[in-house]
Image 1 (cartoon, one colour):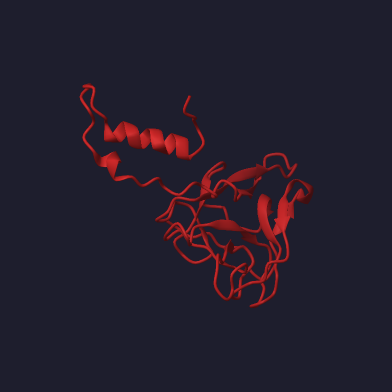
Image 2 (cartoon, helix red, strand yellow):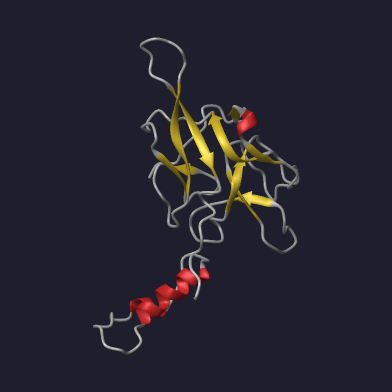
Length: 188
């Protein structure tokens, strides 16, 4: 896994077709943040409601909110990009349509999943209009993709499958409970 870098971290991330993006302003930073860092919301405590760096080491840390548009100090409120086409990342080593993930490293994106799999975006082409020149590469981010459901944990999923008799099967019961819990089904 390789972490992605910015072409120039002193510049804000450029949002292409900003009208089609989704951005959020107003949440202060719990720590200094650099342009392009992936952030999450601090859930509670003295800095509850602030934003801080996200990372893919566990479900709490991987609760992605968006990407910081510019570098800010503690207490400042950056624009956070939730969805849009971004220019500024060094994507030369990635193929078009390659997925981009949250890294295990604080605030960074990577070319492979971290401990907790959170896909943040994909590499997309941008036509430059020059004949014979390959399209530029942009990062399409949609942090809503990363708002995945926490894994369903149920010890019954490790049970031995029932062989077809009339007794209850723990695996089937666990799967039914999961489907109902996710709102994907209903009891008639």
